[in-house]
Length: 434
Ligand code: NDP
Image (cartoon, rainbow, N blue to C red; front, side, top):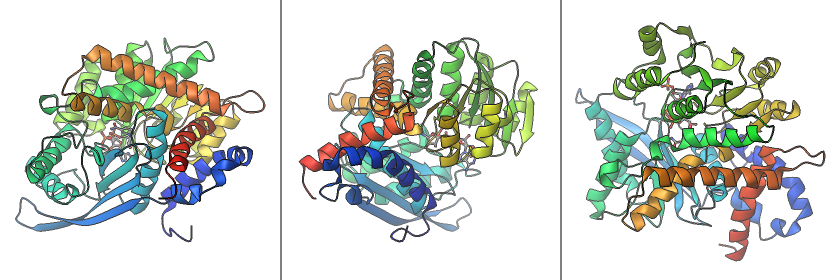
């Protein structure tokens, strides 16, 4: 904490991982050598830069841009770009740290990184978004490359923004290689990448439910958020027979006891992705209930899928979900549950998966996009989806293998942290003190 003052999210992420690792390292002392832990909590490089651009009124705007290159131990830095007013060094360092373990869990050769800006895309015109993305890429291009650092999307950064940044990087470098994933299909994007994080989260939850002889059929599900991850989590859960009752955004929650249908989801996507509207607009158009300023966790469900942002589910929310009989919580977002909430779920014997395990399908499919770009091929939808499912099943198996507790129960927190750590740590030990 003394070394990194004012970085609460980064401390939170490191604390959560270290609590899993202490007992493991005590039993495997080689991982205490070579200053391994001290090196692992220090990003290899942090780049911070000015992003100046001109808005539609001719005014100069200045934002701050970042790229955290956390670890290259097992492959090029890899992780999304986030545009949101809450972005700061602490948030991006936590995300880059988490990303390093998550990417290791996928078993694909990807290191960890994250970037972004405090730019707020809400209320900006399409031309302003393009100018901002180009200005951001005007500095980012110096630090990225297909074998160095391969960014993708995250909150506030979807296919449109990735396209503008990738286009500018291409222009500035005069190279057409794969510097971003999550690209449009017309210039090297992978099928299933937009769906991958949401689908992967549901695939992971499906594996968890199987361990208790359950499946999604007929279960009540709450989803938070209504962006990229949330939309495809809704789609896959619905496809598997679940009744999805909620979606949300920072203004409130939509509650629909009849559950989502394909038609309702298409309307939500239209409102969010094309009209850049709010879930309240969606509620008004469907006549469903909208609760302003409220999160979804008071609604009784069997499965909760937090898919919005960090620390959106606290201990009180966890206790409410538990009291209402929740059986499984799988995180589509990064660190949506506070440490206390996560502990409450585990203590109550709820199946609980931290984001670094359950939402790894997005970056895994980014890894598959990199493979397709490298061989200049595009794989069919079925092939990418089958590989995604296989990777999620592999991560689930790794969590079971490393997360078994003395009393026989499985901690997915320990499982994910230890399995990810072992892969990164072995690679770091083999490559010496660098
Ligand atoms: P989007 O920008 O598409 O959607 C974000 C959603 O979360 C929106 O509904 C947004 O509501 C809500 N949200 C964002 N910030 C806040 C906040 N401070 N308070 C309340 N609600 C908020 O982003 P994604 O769907 O891509 O990302 C969602 C989460 O999933 C993030 O934690 C991200 O890191 C994680 N993730 C994403 C991956 C991907 O492939 N995209 C991969 C792995 C993890 P509003 O519109 O009101 O801001």
